[in-house]
Length: 481
Image 1: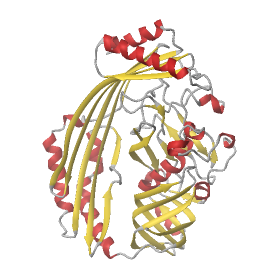
Image 2: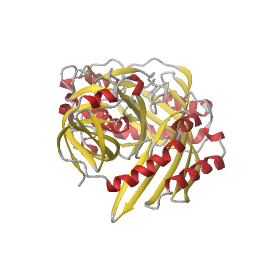
Image 3: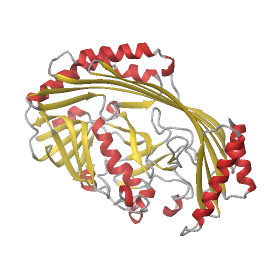
Image 4: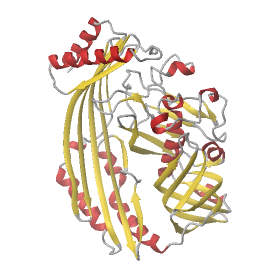
């Protein structure tokens, strides 16, 4: 494959571009789903193609193709150069890339068992069995059990001399049950909502979920929520579980720290960020307990790889350290805007047909030294919430509201009755500033976000947010609607 890709580098060098690269991407994606007793999805698709970028006299050009011949690669590269020349007529300033050494390397997601080698019938049998358990109560009107597996084989060549081959493998699954009675519906899911849990690895990821051990609980809690009292409204202390905290991290810190968004490049489409560059190293983002670390080397992370799509080697760094804004998600184009000589390696593309853009890396809330039981014992009047159902956040990533599947009252240090339709709202720095307790490493767990959208045209990216349950003081909570 490198022989084919080298044609793009040959053409780029001939035209004396500032920088050029080609990414050949072969992707296999398998999805299986059972919904209320019927097989609702069974797909296994493979795509292959290449994307060519050139930086010509300070302007970007990009083109892609799927005809795997040297002639087609040459034509695609010439098209990218022509687009760069046209872009140069309108550019405000020249693009300059931060330096990165050239690498020759092979990297692969570690895994124990290839999920594509597991027979489809074995997967379907498991999903059908889970679905039967979920539907065992007549009040369950919708049941779903799903699996998804993605393998992406990449070959990356640059005019700077990098020659990088990577194989990225991700596996995921979920179950959910919707109970209905008297015009009301309640949803419970496991391990998490919105396409479920996905991590970097193989079939062992599915086995470790122990889906069959949780199906009855999911069903019974969905039914129990129908009779549960509505979550009380007011200002209360709040404990958030890891699967909900993952989305809180994603929306109020991850997107807020993407440097292209901070600089206004997403503003007309998806908003900007309150975490502007003059705040770097000074702004109090949260309490001193809050440490949020970006890490492209994190085992099991969906954004874990050897290199990003700019050919930058994977790194680990602070976004928030001891509560203070300390870093951004950067690529080679923008990192110099905040005085960085080197990119943090956050440039990724969705498949071969999209240009790489700045994306959230794996971003985790570092564990504290408490336990969930200790967090509960320190609350006189509060709520514990788990698993997201809805979210809303403003264009600056400041004001937000999240709805969850289930909650439990906490009274005088004791976890009490189940409550339904819980939600909470806040302002990002005030919310993180109210964090006064985080459970320890024994409860720290990775949670996958497999469907993050960004860009025009839209691109999908995947990343993980690890966390332990955490406690926040004096948060406004209430019901949906």
